Amino acid sequence: MTTQRPRGFSTTAIHAGQEADESTGAVVTPIYQVSTFKQDGVGGLRGGYEYSRSANPTRAALEECLAALERGSRGFAFASGLAGQDCVVRSLVGPGDHLVVPTDAYGGTYRYVNRVARAHGVEHTVAPMADVAAVQAAIEPGRTKLVWVETPSNPLLGVADIAALAAVAHEAGALLVVDNTFATSYLQQPLALGADIVTHSTTKYAGGHSDVVGGAVVVAQEVGVAAYADAAERIAFHQNAIGAVSGPFDAWLVLRGLKTLAVRMERHCDNAERIVEFLSGHDAVSQVLYPGLAGHAGHEVAARQMRRFGGMVSFRLRRGEDAAVKACAAVSLWTLGESLGGVESLIEHPGRMTHASVVGTALEVPGDLIRLSVGIEDVEDLIDDLREALDIHG
Image 1 (cartoon, rainbow, N blue to C red):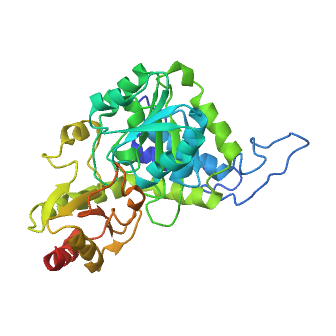
Image 2: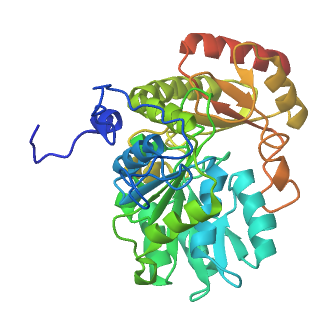
Image 3: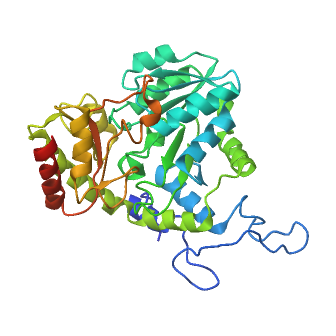
């Protein structure tokens, strides 16, 4: 096939890094469940493979696919999303350096920054990423190395202007890192908007079936700060040196999930829009947080930089935290659990679950908040289940 037109997203997801096996013709990338590889003489490596921490054919296929989907130069697959984020920080930041992180960052990310990176001499400032001027004020030129963004954010679904933040970061000599887990590479392309590095928890939408834990990092074709032109090489070195890589079977599961990412995300978005419509009309609900709503503070930015608005919905209850906790426990079809992005619908209370680690900090979330990961079930069933729980406990 020869064409000047770039291949579409689903075509790329199904084919990038996944040529038919040369020896057997297998159309699905094999699971190379192996730790070491035979060498043809000392240093005579077949395809560059010697030990699976350094490289594995299944992981290599996933990494090529991830890079292609994000339109980056190089992709890296990790044992978890946090392992990937840790590798980015260790590769590009040192003692005495400074980060700017969101006021509503994922609890695990903030725990890492606040308790792990800080213990190694890396300082940080929290800033509202929707306010470009506030981010600019938080940056310390010459000391700030990374501006860290989640958009939409977890769990308040705040939206940040990626292009504007990239310009501000680059002007100060810092790189812009975007956690693209909520939006996915299908709905949003941060590197095309000026970001330098994208991270994912592939546990979520990329894998899509709640059966794998993994992470990804993708580096732009050209980063916006000359001093970091070798960012991909630095990350590759640290990935191997630290060793928190994705195993072959986990890489295979994520690669399989990516093949259906586009069609799943369309259904997630369809269902989320219906759920938002229902919640917006329920008396027990005081506020619905969803970028697709015209009244959302980041709606115009989200409409400009996202294909659609995603499958994550958060809302607050008028009767407070106790009602929110009881409503979460009262559903039967929605699964009470952490994580997100699977085909099944999940409900959780962030203040006591995913974001319990930030209680008492500037990142503490409201106690009356409920977060939904809207799955791909029949949406009428999801609405009926929510309605019953809210009618009783809301």
